[in-house]
Image (tube, rainbow, N blue to C red):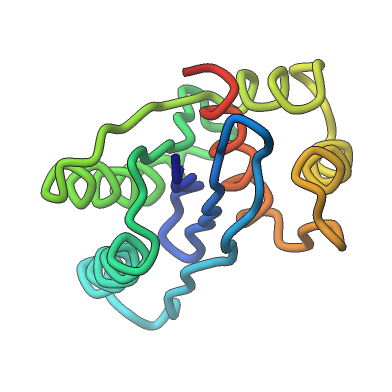
Length: 155
């Protein structure tokens, strides 16, 4: 089963694609969809939609897992992240891909076993659990891989 994990954001949307079989779970692809800050909100959301559609067409995931953030430290980031998440949900719905939502706490618990784990701890565990040659460097991509792996363990 192929799972597409998403860490939504307007400037940077992380993605991670994994495949889970009975024997193992492996990374297929991961990275970030980046948008330029000089673009308007609508243009940035359109880029996220277009790039997400390309990823779905390329990898054909059976499930989409997205980070669900209930609490924002910075109110200014709450709206853009929510808008990006809305684009992700709409894109998945149009493609009839079931969506599962996980909080950062759930993801950290599933990956590290501790809900307040640091990003570096999560990245190191992802490297081990997914048998990666190197630790995923980009925080958003690593979070997306973590969300995908969390989904594979909890559904």
